[in-house]
Length: 404
Image (tube, rainbow, N blue to C red; front, side):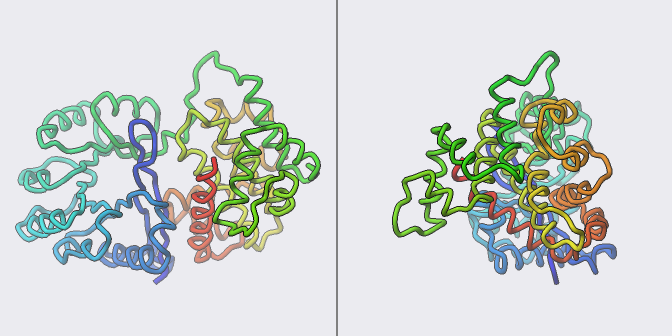
């Protein structure tokens, strides 16, 4: 069965990436009838860990995976590497004797356990005592109840993970209450402060990134631009001489590095490094999310029946989080960037030639499988192709992240 796997980042208090929860759905023929949890979880494990390669999905971080009651009792988690996964016990798992015994065996095997969507009910103490992480849903639980749960459960020495944290206000509330990990899209939202304006240096850098993606931006201009920035020059030479390219001889000139990579790849490299400098006070995951969407939009465009410019789609995805990077509204930023009207329209959420492409990428990364299927039809691509393209984008983004 074809399996659709996306990942949602989990950040620490300093906003570095702790791991990813794997979001998955069986093939689209099974999307609307209810798949039982055991089949779905078994499929994601066999595909992601054996066929696709776990490292490609989680990039050296932890993978948090839901396990049903039956899979826990069968001790299925124990066939996987204990240092790579966190076993999530679903909220509907009953704390029966066989479940407690299986979870104890799993923990003794070196696995960390997390209680998902936690809400206290009678008899939960044996599972709480085995858990390392307790996940509390910030969207479904009133703040006063969350605070009370944290106070009551702190005696067990567990780590608290706040789920569905969508704003910086919620993030700060969770930190103040003692949460260590945070899951949700708060980091990809702008933290807009009144009276704040874009600094001239950041505005220039932002415009350079946009210019580098224009079709008429020449090879000579690229060389001149890179040569004027010591940081980008150094990172470009590191990148071209990395094990990824397996060069026999070291390349030491900017001109030769550009020639070896090609104009298109150098443009992308400038874009990534430029965005990384713009977001130097932001979570790495924000740049990674931008690059994943850039690559995914481009690949969808190349495989689409619709006639679109794939390089324009790359730029669209690259600037999809620019409001969060700059802590400014998208409307204000679009007035300062030399982007095409098609790109601006899509970034502003308007219907247009490119809007379905970015919305398709967003639907996939958030695990909105039904929305993803509809948008795939709109752009003229088989939805079964998207998981392969997404994994390509994730692998590419994680490779480039090493050179920021």
